[in-house]
Length: 151
Image 1 (cartoon, rainbow, N blue to C red):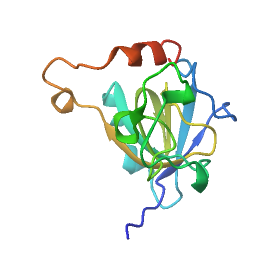
Image 2 (cartoon, one colour):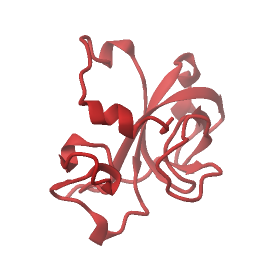
Image 3 (tube, helix red, strand yellow):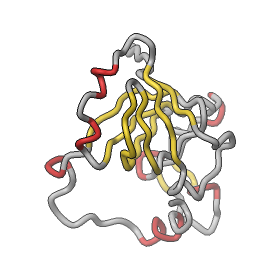
Image 4 (cartoon, rainbow, N blue to C red):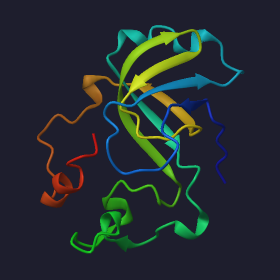
């Protein structure tokens, strides 16, 4: 058994889970009261951060363990749960690289976080070039179609 506690909570205007138009969304990540502003010290020196969060609105019966059509679109190929980034994952974990706008005390303002208001944040990591792929990134053609309006 693994036990995790949120380090913060997402605050933004997105109340409904929707698939598209996340690029302009500005979110505030408010750290939990157990953290001081030192926890975010110097994060604004980075342009981007990776936010790991919990899809808290996904119901148990919606969890996927095998394969499905992305967004339940039968025009898309059937893809395994670990070969896509859908929210109905076994451990309900999401991960997104966001643009850092600013830090104010225990608040981190970011752009492009695809998480709704109230989403628990499990970790915040600065994006470092050295951790990004060092070679060409390949993906199937259906991904570009699926993600056309996501950001």
